[in-house]
Image (cartoon, rainbow, N blue to C red; front, side, top):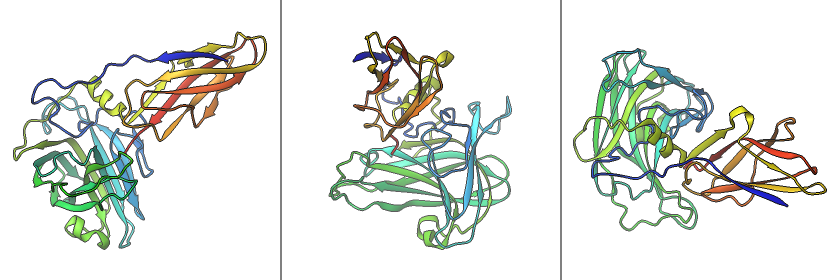
Length: 329
């Protein structure tokens, strides 16, 4: 069996200085959209690290571009996100968008300030909630919801919102064994009566909601938005999801130099070390520039690499065309 190791260029992210990485939100400036620039299915599908949730109702999440030179939102952002919610009546129906921040220890027992800019297609309310999840596996403590619930009154003009709250201490709590605990911020747009306690009785509504420059930091003061370099932000996102597409259709190639058909293996190293062993790895390969073939699993996956093993004829080659890997919370 032939084998080859392929490593794509990477640079580990390091913190420098006491104020570096003060914003615990990743992709709060909505610069990174690895998967697509819009999606209408529940889950992760477009802007990195942001999870679109809807039940009963429906929603579309998309990337929008600021007019060059606009001054309504400071710091010259390029993009903002848009949620179009279509409400369907039902006590358990909802439309929300959230980010899960790795590690429920984050901000435990501390005061935090969330800031963001938002507007809507008409005067409408949205709700903001914090929650803590202690993970899965074993016997973890139950999640805590309804933290710092705040109603935000949106208009058709951009407005900055600032919310200060205290995150409960995790003293005495039990973590799950699967290393997937987190804290979460949730933007609520449509909420049936079952969620009244978590949304200040937001209620149900359809509408278009725009959000920009989301920042979560320690303390009681909203400081200027932290503009991290886009390359650094991409690396932070790739800890949770990454994809690679070969230039000219080929990421990596390995030949079968044997006298007969046999297994060949590509050991593929991720661009960034992932949060955990990926829950999904998929991609496309071909043999001798033939038709692309999908794969939805890989051998020996870990946080740094996976192995693609395929049987190919003697004298032919295996091309890896692309891959995606997800270790989202």
